[in-house]
Image 1 (cartoon, rainbow, N blue to C red):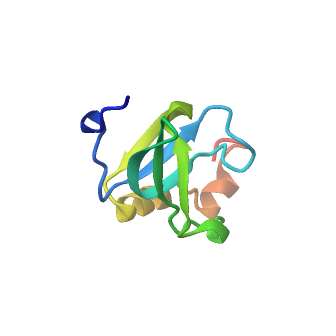
Image 2 (image 1 turned 90 degrees about the horizontal axis):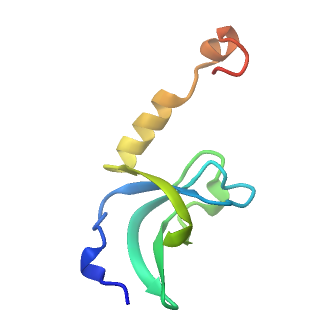
Length: 105
């Protein structure tokens, strides 16, 4: 039995999950806002809503879930704004892509 009192409270956070053996399309991770742990069929899941992320508009604002035992790593962001700011800073600019050595952008 899973003791809910030992699970973290990530209210207001945004989490990026990396899944072991991830299927095509989610190799770069899955992002959830409003994450919450829930036991479904005696298995622990992390449930949440998929935020509006460029390139994934077709699933934006849908509820989703990942079995916690399939997560190999995660990154916790303080908010959607924190996530967006960090992602924007991580995206290479056109000039940086143009002048960087191949594959290092």
